[in-house]
Length: 313
Image (cartoon, rainbow, N blue to C red; front, top):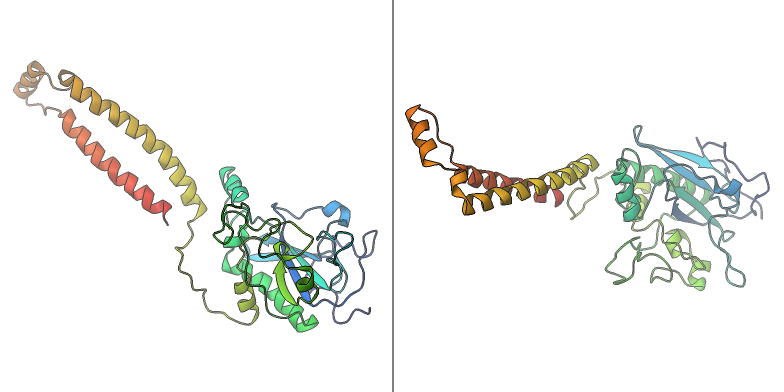
């Protein structure tokens, strides 16, 4: 089958191009696309091309750009999908494959944050990707539509790589034989965009609940800010500070409990009549530890409430 249209993506690096070597693919005419996430923070080696997609998008968060690395020609089969014997074709079924560097797994995101990496600064969590990152994917989706006629449409359900009410009791919800996984017949007639989680003969659940509908809207020229009913996401520095506040508040709470208990059972350790008289005679202010405890408790309650509000967004 002859390749038609431009085969090299404008501006994409060809430094890791595998289409002229051991893992060269088959010629085809793309009419659909699959989105993956690498579950890492750098461009994978792909075993020298044995498991490579068509392209990889590496976020440059500072520049708010995706750096594209092309591994195969547009109309050449890639190798990032599982293809079992005796079923349907996957990699060679006219599919263009994008790997997005980052993660769709909330556990991985949390582990990276705990290790000191900052979301949207050091890595992208694709189910909550910033608008600029979705717009960068949309640029490629639009180019593929204009040059290769891949429809500007996508599947409806993108299940979370974690808990999802649409698949209760199963985590990750998007993994394995989920309701979002296409039948072989549906896959054979599919055109447009889907995720790894939708492809038959595969069990991976990436890219999770990525907002690919927003990608399609941006590819169609929608420049309006997205509408959402969820609270704006918190800055990762705030999350780290909140965790530190939690630990500090726990220590303060313990100390207050000790002070309050001591004041109740041994008030003379806080108020001594002889010392009070001497202090009054000298014109000194008499400390009221009971009052101080109450003031500290009021302050602590305010801090606890403030931290709770921060966590809620």
